[in-house]
Length: 151
Image (cartoon, rainbow, N blue to C red; front, top):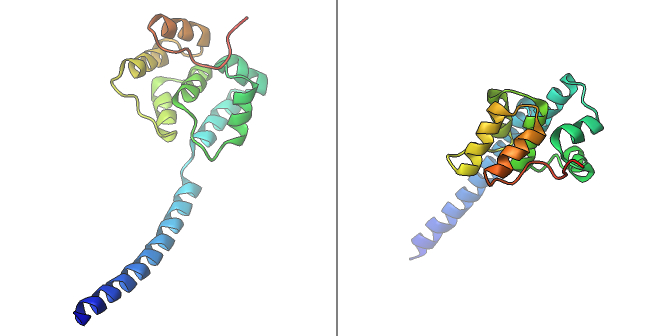
């Protein structure tokens, strides 16, 4: 019986050492990945810069309000919601492939669900036209993108 207790104690010590070693390896790998892989925020920023967007442009093209713009600037440690990403993609007037890359970088993949297929449809047919996009989404029973409406 003593041997079993000794074996378990040795296994716990080995597992503890392995855990500490793997923890350090993971943190290094994550730091390396974070340094080399562009985030959603970096990709969206690059596209907005390329299109000479200003805060007013962001709000006008995406229908995301001042609070959403502030979140866009400050909440970089959190991934944005899929409707926020969709509003940005539509506002940026980018093609479906680039939009799906942005969605993927934000942690999303469009599924076969009705809502996601409506999103896919607007990525193809309503690029750069957030108002028309929202009219279509509303008509199909999907919540419109953005957090403000046109007056």
